[in-house]
Length: 313
Image 1 (tube, rainbow, N blue to C red):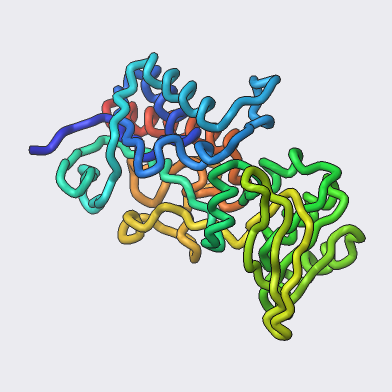
Image 2: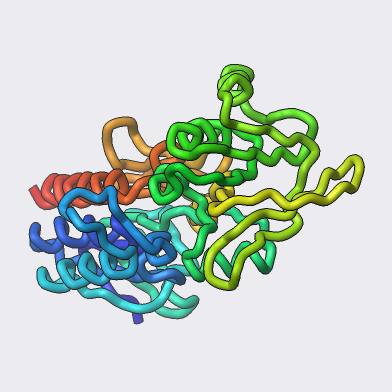
């Protein structure tokens, strides 16, 4: 037995919930599946201080509960479960939840987000979970480390950009690059190289994130040419080795870029499949902020509503 819905939203971060609020207010009766990480990346963020309307800041989980409550107030049907398969070949968009439940959708809004890549060290994950000094977003969390010393690992453009951003806030930024050169463009590499308070360590890998059981106090690194090990004092450890968009199940139907982000028609949330829209970090490898995700969630709901109106008209 299949179920028919007017608007299916896949994902429950700021993009998904904002899309739900707008879709529900437009009488589209949205059904939202929360996915494997209800609330998205923000549930791993201790303090959110840069989202407008929260003068005293808010914790990530608290903000997501508020967004969920707001979506519920307009009668969004919020469900547990995750989408395991889709079929966008015909006029009816088919989606399967938990491998068994089949849903036929007039419109689909994809808000599956992206997951930050981490080194996978036990100590890194420990302090990430504690919220005690490990972060994958300098723009989100750099403010908490102003006038302190931090370490950042990564070699690409985004790592250089985040290191440069941190250098304006922190007294010292130590950058760990695994190889003997950057992967970043020459202009970005040159920018960090000439920034006085950025110390670049090539051929250097992270052995362990050090801490007192609550917060980060330093990073143990090893030179992979000499095998020399040393400890670097730091209160923050930033990981900038990329993000993985959660878009694998759409790859046979939607146009993706080389790293897996969904391509949208510029200035809209439209994908290459009519009636399928994208919002949030599943399509955004540039800004990756809660506020921009929420904005594109609004766009997706408005685009979906116009699409339905044209069909019915």
